Image 1 (spheres, rainbow, N blue to C red):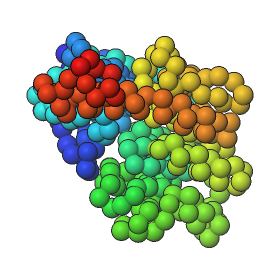
Image 2 (cartoon, rainbow, N blue to C red):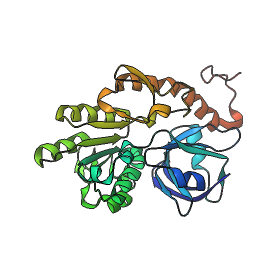
Image 3 (cartoon, helix red, strand yellow):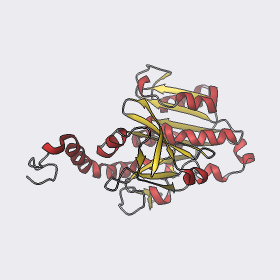
Image 4 (cartoon, one colour):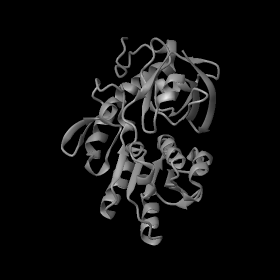
Length: 297
């Protein structure tokens, strides 16, 4: 059992939780993920580790309510428990394999979108601990959906650039427009870009960085479902080869990822998730007679 020590609402339908998980906290690295399960009948949910505190034995997760299982998670309170938490899983950020000297000779740009800010934060924090300050673009549709700004600014200071699509806060425009501003108008040179967020955002970020000749890494955690490679949901094509985000990643060379194919595959589970959500909302009144949800009349 894994106790919830802290629960915080970051934005509409976006939550942060600190969990007691001493062994995971002692071993995890930026870029890795874990699988949480609320109870014996709960769904296995893969979530990237947002932060960890080795001394306190705590790990931090951030999730958005998008389906039945995540909505149930949002109902959990401080002091309650997850039945199972498994991790760390996946491969850590490739940056963790470099020496401090190598890192200090690199100019790194992170581009985060929405909830993708959560897995970007531990990488930026880890770099800061190595004496490296990265540039970070934090994108959101509107000011109310900007998350973890305070935490991010604590590890990158004035190198943080917030961009909102509607211009309600920070730079007015999408993250790609801010990349153009930094490279074209401010003359920034980058040796590496790491982008994490919605699939469509990562697609256009990688397209732009390829044009600029900036090596780019994309985290494909948004398409993970089972987290073990058995369900096939996170199957993707990288450089004409088949890869699985959960066991081979979640980070890949963004310029080799077939984003269109990955986005098409990610839609395969929408109907099933919709059925589960409808059943949860209707509760005892749900009978399945509509012929859509898959239940029995």
